[in-house]
Length: 237
Image 1: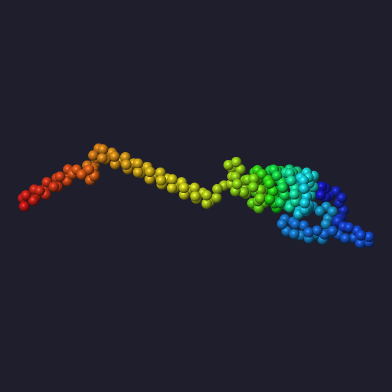
Image 2 (image 1 turned 60 degrees about the horizontal axis):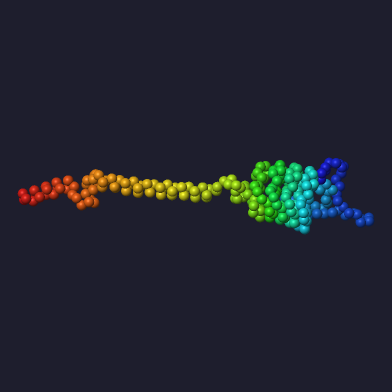
């Protein structure tokens, strides 16, 4: 796995000999979420599948030297410590599954350099901090990180230090609706104050008199003229 072209020659397979008979090993491997049965295992097999065991301790840095590695599955164990930044050297890695362990710390930014990575599963650990961005990390969904309550940033809805994901269209509409109602209430309040002020000025200055006369009981000048005209008409008749 460190140098697949070192030996050269024809491909060799893992096998066991029992006297006169020889048997090739077979293996069922989970590759990018699907199970495949390998009838023969090459000696330069470029996948490590050690899931569902009881392995403990930290992931060894030496894995970062396996330059031809295409798949790494260490899920469902009891692995602790942090994800080794040396995994960023595995430029041929296509899938990485470290889910359901006890891993802590941040996701190394070095993993962004894995441009061949198409499947990532870091769920159900104790990882913290911002999820790296760039290259293949921009294509992974929430399922790659679920169960890590202290992770933040895209694609999760939890923001990091006030810098989070863009608001949804529903949030934008809700904020717009609140803003419009604030404008309406503000306009209504200003209108009430203006109306009260104008009413005070009208009663204070007595203008217009016909409007004031409707409320203070004093007849206006035009009203008095109309009543005088009626009295003259009644006397003449």
